[in-house]
Each structure stands twice: as C-alpha cells, then as structure tokens.
Length: 415
Image 1 (cartoon, rainbow, N blue to C red):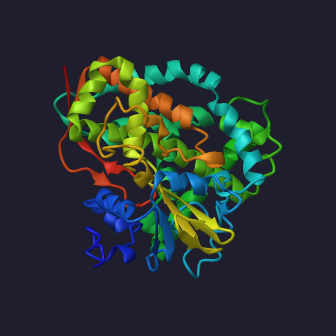
Image 2: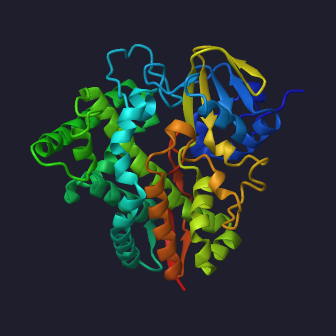
Image 3: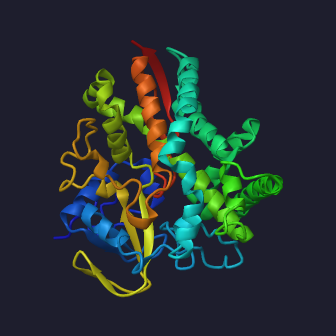
C-alpha cells in the first residue's frame, strides 16, 4: 500500500514537496519530510510545477552530494542553486551568474574576493557597532502594543548590517530589503507580467550599484564589499550579469539568512517555551543556542545541484542532467543526527552539525557574521528579560527556497 503524504493525500512517490503553495500553508511540511526520511534518503518527483527532480532528505546524503562538486554542479549554466528552472519561452531574460552558482575554478576566485569581509578579525571590529544598534533598537520597541517583528526587528537589523558592509547610503537602506525580496520572489517568476516588473526592480538595483561602483573606482581601496570587488583581479572585470548576480547573492545571503533566523527566535519561544526559558536563564547557553536556533529555523530550506554524470546516491541512480534538491530543512531534523529534532533545545550537544549554511566549498561565506548578529540579539533580549508573544498568525514567504516570514504580529513584555 502506498504511503500517503499528509499535505496532499497523494502517494509519497508523487509528492511535490517543493510546491511553494504548500509552504505558505505549512501544515504538514515537517511531517512529510519525516515520512520521506523513514522511507529512504532519496526520492524522485516525476512531475512538478518546476519539472522532475530528486529530493535528498538525509543529513549524511546531503553531505555526500555537497562533498562531490565535480559530480553535482552548482553552475547557473547547468540550472543554478534553486529548484526553479528558467520558464520556457524566456530565453531572452538576463541570467544572474553569482559565485555560489559557479563551479571551480571561477567559484574559488570570486568567493576569495569577498571572504576578507567575514574574517574573525572583521567580526571583532564589527561587534561593537552591531551591539550598539541592536540595543538601541530593542529599547525603542513598544511594550504591550502589537507590532510586526519582521519589519521592526529582523529587517531593520539585517538591512542596517548590509548597508554597513556595502557602505551603502544609510537613508536608502530599505532598498536593500526591497531588492532582496524581489530577487527571491517565486510568485512573480510564475507570472509573465509580474516577472517583467520584477526585472525592472532588479535593473533599478543594478543602476544604483553601478553608480556606487563608478564612484568607488576613483578612490583608494576600502574595506567595503564594492571596493573589494573593484580592486580584485577575480571580480574587477565582471560582466554586468555577473555584477548583478553577485549583488543579489550578497544581499539575499546577508538579508534572508539572518533575518529569518531572527524571526525564528519568536517562533521558538512561543512553540518551545521550556527551551527558550533555559536560554534566557543561562547566558552561557547563548553561543550554542545560536547554532540550535539556526538549525531549528533553517532559513534557506534547500539548495539545488545538477548531476554531471550518472551517480548513485542512497541506493538511487541519478542520471546525468537530472535536478537534485538537497533539503536542508529535512537534514536538520534528521533523527539519526538530531534526536527530537523538531524541538528547540539550546543544550543540544551537536547543534553545530546543522547544514543550514551548507557544506563543502559552497558553505556560506558570511556564516560568522550571521552567527554574530543572532548572538548579539539573543544576548540583548536576555539582558532585558524580553518576552515576545505572537499576537496573530505569522504570514510565511511564498517559497520553498527561503524558509521564512513576511509578517509576524507580536506583543512584547519585559520582566
């Protein structure tokens, strides 16, 4: 008898777990991943809104796929890093090559260019400013009134950090949020007219950053990301498409990952109050609690690869050219690695084994910065004995890639 998926009532063999409509409702996403893991680490979806694809749902087998970049390609020319393929009939649409969607050796040089912005020394240099901005923002929040945590806290903190990294005009910093949301807008991609408007916004971003590029090119090297790209041999001669792609990568990577984990902190304290109380009562748990929160939230639900040759994974033969979707959200709930993985537990001994930042050569270059920002937020919340209660149903992002929230109405109390 076929195993039925809870979300659709369809046999597991034809479940399209990547359908973003299911992620907005979210009722059985985690349950369906658990069912998939019980029935094997790799599953084939023969038909979906994004074409056929393989799902890899176990921690071990995702590490295997990520650890073989010469067999499983990230290249934008092969299909890129998300489940979404370019819709038919849109061949004239610009591509957005970015270093996360490149294979070696191009990936190596371009990644190395921006890596100095995220060294331990840079984190020490940035930490004081991050703490000051976080403290000021938390002190400005209303007590006993409903407000949107996503907008007032998650977006404001991450957008401010991005503005500093790019040395971006502070008064225009919310443009970075607009551009990030536009770049990852799965809903607009599905509609030709909305997608045209989406590209107009992205070209607006290119024009703005091109002006910044031209201004900085006349100046001495500085420690911001634009200047780093200008003065690096690997990126100074990028095509306009590569410039666009790497801007999108840095903006989305710097925005969505941290932003949605910050929003996840509210969900964790409301869904798992016992674990949250442990964290708030013991400052010594903050660092491990950061890893646990990132694991539990998993702000990017998946990454995609394309097989360059026939290769067996988890007992299934994946053919050359086929799409492979690695579900980080499932891996971070894998019972063989994280017992009771649906539970937020800041004392979890192996929380740092999460795959939310990926694994191997494509592991998130900004992971340290994300951890620092989240650590400071939790620490400052702990100092203020903040209690943040949901005041309504959160609105989730229409996406099976970005695992996050558009809105989250809350009421904050202290003490």
